[in-house]
Image (cartoon, rainbow, N blue to C red; front, side, top):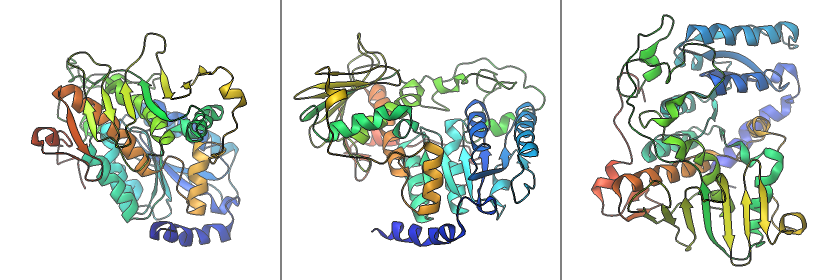
Length: 417
């Protein structure tokens, strides 16, 4: 058992002794960023009898009021045995971390806020559930992973495909690792392309929105509601398209599907050694691993989502909807020799591990390495030349220009680590 696991096991004995089903021993959780995704998490967490939502941080008054009413309405009708004591509500999440009774935070902000929030929460000894992709840059991801490990907290990446969707992704990984398609040769990740610089026009900032706080460590620019909706929205805002806040569709959905490729290769602690971009276009970039496996990016004419595994004896296609194999009966009939844990759901896996001290299915190193793949793709598309990468040092080999792209400048006012 590693030193970190030993510590977590010891720390979990107190939880185990108390009994996690008792209302007095629920995990106190605060949400950072209850927008579209954060609100979805809130709906699920207030119904989880092992959790108690005790606060949230939000920069828009309209969403603050909506989230407050959502949580208070539930607890007023379903008051826990220890008499829920209300919410801590703030625009600055650092105020949440000052609460000694707080056990954990769920980070559902835009991606450019993930790094600082995770590091500060880890230093405050709060467990973290962070939406994917967990970081904007390779160096930021490593700093996050280091903070989690150094402070011995439990971190779950929001990569729900590892635990949910009927187990089809887990089953696919078990099959690939068990040799169902022979020797794995290639993985194709069918997702969108890189981001673009934000070119949106400036609009008047609505009353009740702290735009400077929304931007946080990102470059200063004028308000636009495409980035930060001025209502309680039921869509995923398009900040995901722009490089200042995200790594494009390539990372937004790629953080799910590249993750399944990493998992199937049992590569949660490593990455590729070479990146080979196409001369033009935003698909067909290749990443080569030390064992010779190729991971390719981009949709194919016949398959426009999910992950494809190519082996010497067969192929498996898996997505949230379609799932098929060649030979056709492989998925139905193959008996895997590798068996992976199947939690009830992604939140419960996180809570289970807070109590037990085990690593969650989508632990921080897995989240970091998957985000790194997306970032390596974007760097390859930007530079348009072959790149040698050291997955241990997490640096490009003898390439200063590429290494400059492993991190970015941030506004110091809002990057407080």
